[in-house]
Length: 88
Image (cartoon, rainbow, N blue to C red; front, side, top):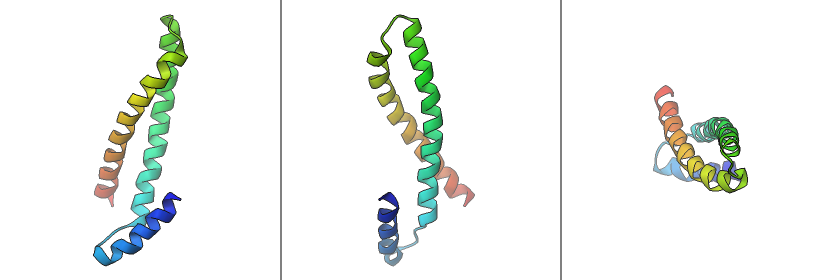
């Protein structure tokens, strides 16, 4: 669905200026992989630390990881977009 939307955005934007579908898909894919790896490790760390300190991991992980995940993913998205734009 995202690729289809990106295709239509590319078709529309060709009239307005330059737009590269490959870069958009590359940025989204790299962001997802990098964020998934970082947040996966962070999830394990938060679970282990909360259990070690006597907290229920179910009560800690959901709000904590949601907040951290949003911040980390947006930061990685900006860095990935910048990196792809500089390299390409």
